[in-house]
Amino acid sequence: MVAITFIAADGTDQPIDAEEGLSLMESAVGNGIEVIEAQCGGNAYCGTCRVYIDPAWRAVTGDVTEVEVAMIEVSGDMTPGVRLSCQITVTPSLEGLIVRTPMSQS
Amino acid sequence: MSATASVCPAHQGRDDRKSAQIAAANLAPQEGARVVGAFASVREILRSTQVRQAGASADQADLSKPGEISFFFLDGDLHRKRRAAVAGLFAPKTIVTRHQAVMDRTMDEIIAKLRSRGSAPLDELSWQMAVDVAADIIGLTDSDSSENLANRVKAVLDLSMGRSDSWLGKALLTAKIMIRVGAFWKHDLSPAVEARRKHPKNDVISHLVKENYSKKGMIMECLSYGGAGMMTTREFIVMCAWHLFDDPALLERFLTGGEDDQFAILEEILRLDPVVSLLHRRAAAPVEGSAGVMMQEGEVAALSIRDANTDEATTGPCPYELDPDRAKRMKAVGAYMSFGDGPHRCPGAQVALHETRIFLDRLFRLPGIRLVCEPTIIWNRQIQGYELRGAVVACDPA
Image: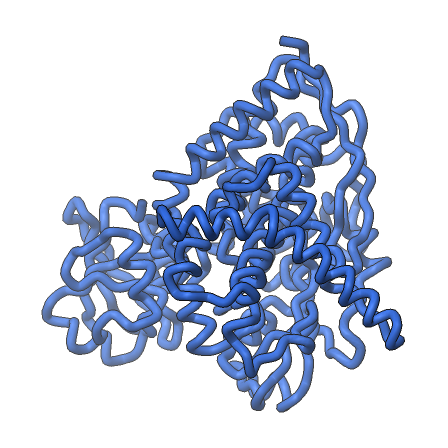
């Protein structure tokens, strides 16, 4: 298990234990992070699993991938560090990761 | 929940499915294909980068001319780029800020028509909604009428999956398709293209014009988006209405619940009665899954959406029961595999859910709304899915 902390828009934090090999989105949904809607089930086709990677972790999680660009652009969400959590795989290197979540995905 | 529901012999619970019997009697996987039904396996195959489209005329698509075939038959980077280019048209935000107005306007017309006539065929009403919404997204808005547009699209699609083994049969089929495609081009697509050359809009055809698609490429792309958006949504709406008419408690919950609850109900109905029952994939290379090799190179798998959607490993107990709380409880996507998965997941999934929700919310609030004739369920061999015809709804006159 990998310890990851989600911080909601109102500042409350929710630590979870994420399973290695799952996506960050699947880990969030499985642990009751309700703002992660993931309407398309993790195929990068809806943009409703957006998260903001804490600056200190962006080098580890990597930049936005080409697969994510279209849906992030459509969402209009220009927040620094924005990623689709369905495109981030949980690995041991993410131990201690901090991600913030938007007020809503719409 | 349904008055006609029976107890499922294989599971402890009701069987609320309405299309299971006709599907069981008619489902026809491609010859030589291995049927896969476990949810996890179906998902892994659909998400694999090693599989290619199969079935649904995929073997007839000329992949050496990607500019002349539908995105539906492509895979890999080219497929992703084609999908991404118009992805914004199907995004949740676009649905709310743009398409919902089309859905509301169309529903105003449908309600007015129903109230003035007193009764109407339900699939005629759902067809109007599906056509108007799809036409707006694609940009097919310069036809003589949306009804004629819909008939021409359907005429082409009905033939496009036909087959004939004889030389003469093939020649006749090709000639018929060319005539129908010609009519679609002349009356629908060509006027839309000309209009967008002068005044580009935010729709599929404007994108095709901007990217200099060939005439054939435009036809294929528009028929793919149109066919999927129109034909499947028509059935989805009628199926959901049928369930709600049959089940007063479910209808009460639908009408008193918030949008999220309404979507949960619709997705659960779609899980039980998916419009498309089978998806085929061919392995271009061995497909490795979490449990080892799942497909050998060259092998074709017929992925059973119905089996995957009722796999107790992901649905929990009583998989044939209509339980709108199931997906949330199981932390699953509500429609399970009904919109497919992976790179080819249905682009219009959220559009279909929204237009169905709006249609049914308005319909069931009509004074005196009732189902005066239940639909007859028939099987469409071409798409391997059900069609619901003959349902008639009535309401109090205006």
